[in-house]
Length: 88
Picture 1 (tube, helix red, strand yellow):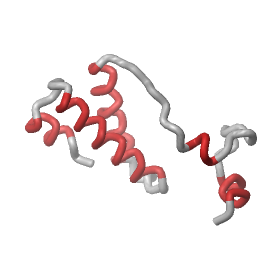
Picture 2 (cartoon, helix red, strand yellow):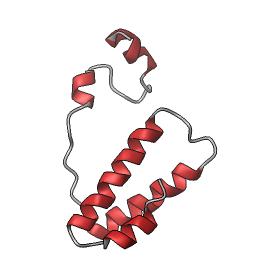
Picture 3 (tube, helix red, strand yellow):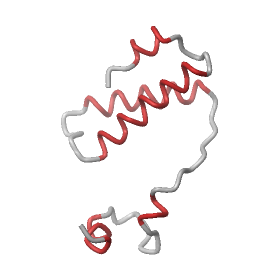
């Protein structure tokens, strides 16, 4: 798919000046662990919604798994607790 075709399929909220390369650049977001635990919980709820079947679902699942792994590395969760959280 060409970049023009992808751009035509992007949500209307994304500025037309934004390139695909810019969308792939990492963004650093700092937040307390408790906030990240809340983010994981909300992602789990969204994942269970019956209409959540779009292509971004796998991206979000991957993000949540990586976030859980990071919380284990930072000793916020034990591996056992993370497994209980990880129903992705």
